[in-house]
Amino acid sequence: MAGGIGVGMSLAFLALLVIGTYSAAAGLAGGLGGRGQSVGLAKGAVPAKYQPIVQKWGNLCPAVNPALLAAQLYSESGWNPTIVSPANAQGIAQFIPGTWDAHGIDGNGDGKRDVWDPEDAIPSAASYDCELAKYVKNVPGDQSSNMLAAYNAGAYAVIKYNGVPPYPETQGYVKSIRTLEKSFAAPTSRVAPSQQAAGAIYYAQQKLGTPYLWGGEGTPEQGGRFDCSGLAQAAYQSVGIELPRVANDQYNAGSHPSRNELLPGDLVFFSTDLSNSRAIHHVGLYVGGGYMINAPYTGAVIRFDKIDAPDYFGATRVTKDGAAALPTFKPAA
Image (cartoon, rainbow, N blue to C red; front, side, top):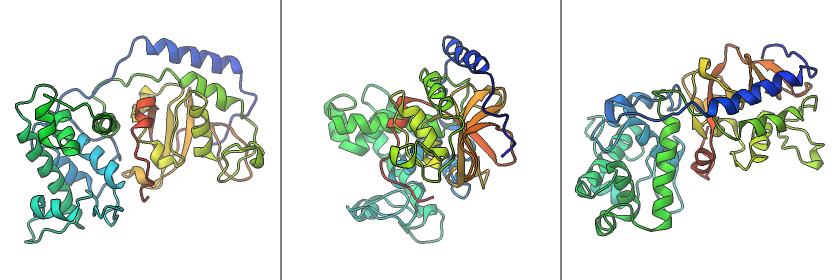
């Protein structure tokens, strides 16, 4: 990473940045915008080898878009095509054998329907979503949310209740996928700033000068030391947001502002593969002016560093809903 500017950086500078965060919150709003072809995928959010398939099949019907399909796949498997669940759900789209037999398709046209082949499983997931959408097409409300509810609770329940049924599991599933959808979508307008950003910065700046520790989470046994993702996790935990422990999962905890839209409190990420968020290896907490609070590596201390580096990947504007929507399993990197 680029050289630091030292722990003695003026706290007045930080105060101005934090004030700017709250001021900006009053005037900005974000959202997905349209559906179908109008919804692109955020840079690197989907691994490069799957992105063309998700983009193509995510436009199969009006109830689905590429970002929603990506959110489902990530939530199910974390992009791991060999994963098997305790319930014997298989592959990247986590089809159970009976559902696959009934709804699996030959997505790549090679004459086989293979649940373990993402080129079949991803199109099958989109196709199954669209089948469900047809069953509930006359139900009032948002067609995508009704489709997701049918996926979780069955089409009959959605029809019976004239929308998402009042089942906590189903309502939680729909909310999680629709929230994750925002993380996988390329923003069509400026991304709304997090109200918790200032508190996260305040926490992190108190750790300036603390020696780095690989695997550090700031516990007393560790002498209050952190690694990069441990510091990001603790900073947002201090304002009531529970982030995952690993940087490449933290990337999906909110929408993704562009480089010129960064605000204090955004998490900034660095990757060994600029087309794949699963290859993220480092995270910092942006403070403005092109700088971040950074826990860089063994032998260094937590400090201010510039964010501009060849492996700069992108940023996430963390939200409480975004963090809560992340799957609880640990996807394969």
